Image (cartoon, rainbow, N blue to C red; front, side):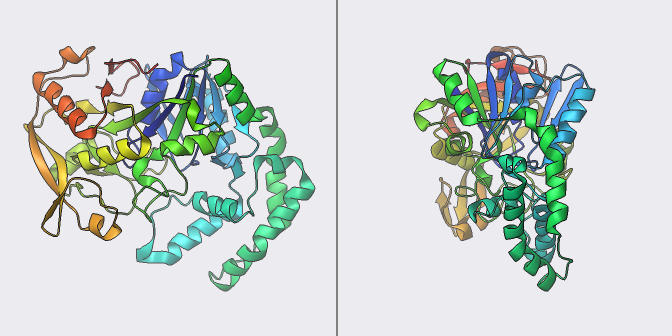
Length: 427
């Protein structure tokens, strides 16, 4: 049962799309198990760049079946637009499967997300305003709309009525907004039913049968470990579980079927949105990382906050995910620095701390303790093996591996599909 989980080991945007795409030719199924269109992957194939927001990266590999699992929240208009855009570029999307148990992002979820974030002002979380959090809240509150509900108008209407009973009170009396009509929402949602119908399936059954048949299934997280609702920098997190355990609940497979867990690490660190970030840079180095690395959110279009590599976070990701391997991305971005700082610990109230503090207050006040590693100036984008890298680049990778607690099995030396050094096979 060759089941692999691939997830971000930092705050997201680590290059998961490139890693997933690299494995695509060896994988039978690629499964998104959490998140929604608040995530984004950029995949470069030849001279073509694809920005994927909701679809699994496996959509670009003809031999692969892409799956949107039950743990994902789906905005039908975004999904259909993304499918249409790929079809126009000659990509076959007909093999896509969508769980009938996945929850729908409704128009009122988007409205609530935007007005709530605006109302919070300085206390805002930094959401993307796409209705993700309110949809997960509806799911937990048991007033959510699932994909399968689009095929029973009576049930759909009852569920929309139940959800809007409370939400319209909040919108009109707290936020001074107009009430949302039940009939309007139902009509819009029913309009997606026929278009989505060819893709809807019992994906839990499909995936478990595939694993029983020794197919290779890759479970793809949408965000990073530090954005996990339980294990991230709460409350500045997403509303689901991108950590490895989320693959089981978000796709419907048991933990005994997972054989490998791969963490994606950027050779430095970035973050989008509010929240603590110990190694964040506010100087020329930070601007250089942002410019050279093209650090702009695929989905949000926001500039990413940039900082040096944080080994404390990497060790934490290894621990909470049970990581077996790392894929280190964007090593090429660091070319040209004479010395490269790496955060090996934190200083908190005069104490040296080498593991991620569980206290939100301590983490907020954590100051990075840096170790300086020698840099390199040689172009590494054409390197095909580890030995092709400059000695200092090799030493940098080995140092990160030793500090992070799991072997680095692949290294990204450029954005292209073929600009990757494989040290150990993932499959």
